[in-house]
Image 1: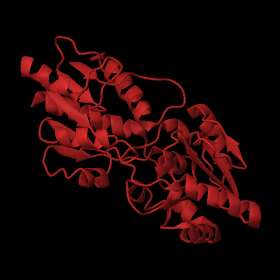
Image 2: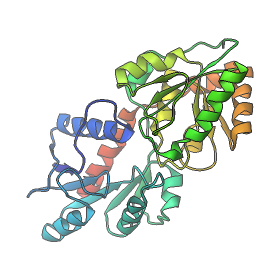
Image 3: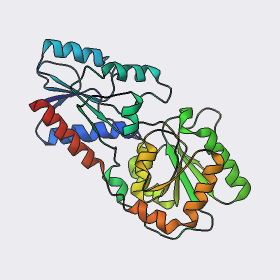
Image 4: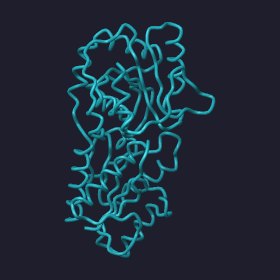
Amino acid sequence: MKVYINRQPKVGPWGGGAKTVNKLSERLLNDGHTVVYQLQEGIDTIFCFDPRPNAFGENVNHFYTYRKAFPGTKIIQRVGDVGTHGKPELTDAVKRCLDKSDYFIFPSKWAMEYVNYSGEDHSVIYNCPMQEFYTNRNERTHIPSTPRVVTHHWSTNVRKGFDLYRKFDDFCNESGEFEFHYIGQVPRGCSFTNQSSPMSVQDLVTCLPDYDMYLTASEEEAGANHVLESLAVGLPVVYKDTGGSIPEYCIHGGLGYSDFSGMIDSLRAVRDEYPRYKKDCLDYKDTNDMVIDKYCDIIRRVHEG
């Protein structure tokens, strides 16, 4: 089978979508399929990670034009992002696709509901972390008197929750109750007391298990990978529960909150009952190999009709 993927593999500290592209490309090639990244004759399945233009200027409209020329071609839309973090053009593009493609994959029930999809040809497949995040797992059930809290983001979009992170950083400096470390990029004018640049997967696998709890203030993410990586390394998650995939992903591995006061309360609750939250967190063992298995099965089934 010849499969066209409209995003190319990347190396370095990229987000979860890029890691999934890499993994799917690798699996399809290992299974004996041909993988291409530009539209060309003979494609059996178009697997769309993003309806917007790729590096070659090919967008979802080109896919439908291609299918008119080659009617046997199947189009699968993996809806990895619904544009809630400042990308309204992506929201519009996803919604325009809903009655045109052969199959849809959503990373959360929330994402499917957000774009009002009501068709039958779909699956909700939660994102999962790379296997590497399990190699140095933190299984400690005790917690120090000053717990070390960490978060990591490669995006500087305000919806990641930088206002709450800055409040928490100030709280830590004033109270000494927790220690906070931020890993990743920050918006202009924003800084933290303990701050590191974006890291490769290999460095994250070594770094994250040194902490005790994971904090996220991000909201309305269709499929948030950063919290899954924290669960994989063994860190209970304190998360904002006001929308997005994170409450779905972390319901058995942490505790939610809705505002800054609630954030502090939830951090304290996880600290005070750490062994219980730790056990729930360590029960999580899913990997993105499982996700790729499901993607490949869908590609095969859709191709066979």
